[in-house]
Length: 358
Ligand SMILES: [Fe+2]
Image (cartoon, rainbow, N blue to C red; front, top):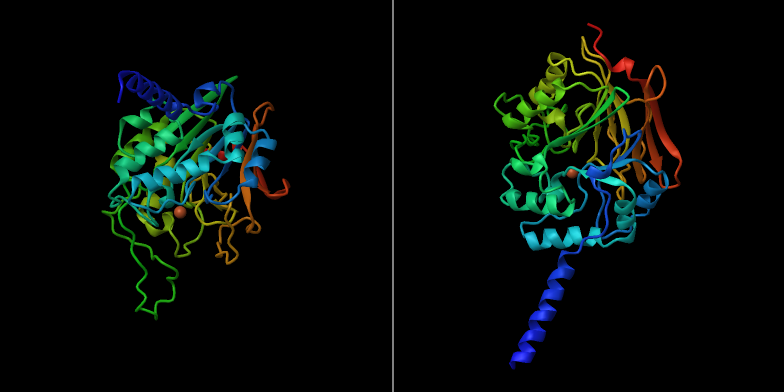
């Protein structure tokens, strides 16, 4: 190669490098200065499918959109495949429009973590975590990058009103679940893939994340949106959820109570349908779990739940909280919105009703 050609080669190479590092303009979490009042969320989006639901999200002009996991279906041990599948989502015009217009936060579930129903044993979790942070443009100085897992929180406040968004990691530290014993057909209580495991040694969040969550719950907030990729508040149905580790689910209820954390509402995904569950163990205020899980997926054999308010919604949808901070009695309305832009499920509560009374 002549010296002139070498110079041209390195010049082109440098152009390629610059090109590879270019990122689309996105709304960063650091750009969101005001107290959000419209918070949309959803999960379960196959990157190879068109995603018209995202255009509906943009039209509603939420302040924030939270991805609750299974944001892509990677299911691989090959990190190039994982990266490529994120890129497939990233190249979609409807996804780019979402990122340009709405601040986006994200947690992962099993399929974007890397393997179906995977927990702490997934061998590529360290590498997958880096790819997750890079794709979702989690700022380099975010505390989320300083510790194992992807958990973290964001706080917003104005006029003495305070919102906390808590992003849980339900994968990185989770012990293996107990498979349903299919030979014990006499025990008809258990169905689908898993049965509850009473083993007190087993963890869902892991000791460090529990310690961190306790500190978060001790901070003042009027509303705390706790983002869990898997469902928290429904009845046991044999699919993955907090019901598979009942001690951990009880630990969550106990922690909310012992820290006197007002305003806790869960949002969750994973199951491909939408529903609103309401729990109220003794001595608690109502704990809602609003599931939105059908950005591209749908599910028609919806499992029953004794805690469900109204019906489930089975077709493509996203969730949206509308918070009225401005009145004497601030309130939040939980909405599930379908592909036609109309409200499919709705429930409202005052924030006063989400408080311990003593
Ligand atoms: Fe999942």
